[in-house]
Length: 57
Picture 1 (cartoon, rainbow, N blue to C red):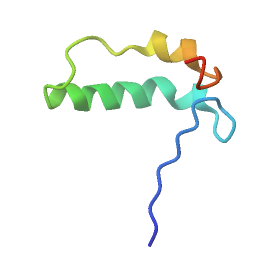
Picture 2: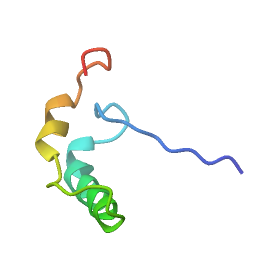
Picture 3: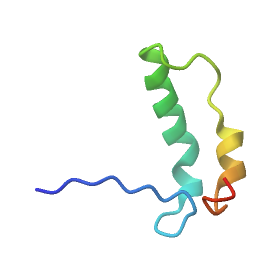
């Protein structure tokens, strides 16, 4: 079986705006639990790059 992860940060495939904040909170909470992140979740930064072409990001 082939497994894949889809990243759709511009909302083309999924309505990213509906799941972004919850997904980021879960991800950064996990990183905090592993002592890999110590700051607040940078949700604002992600909202800034939604829909922006990769070379610009």
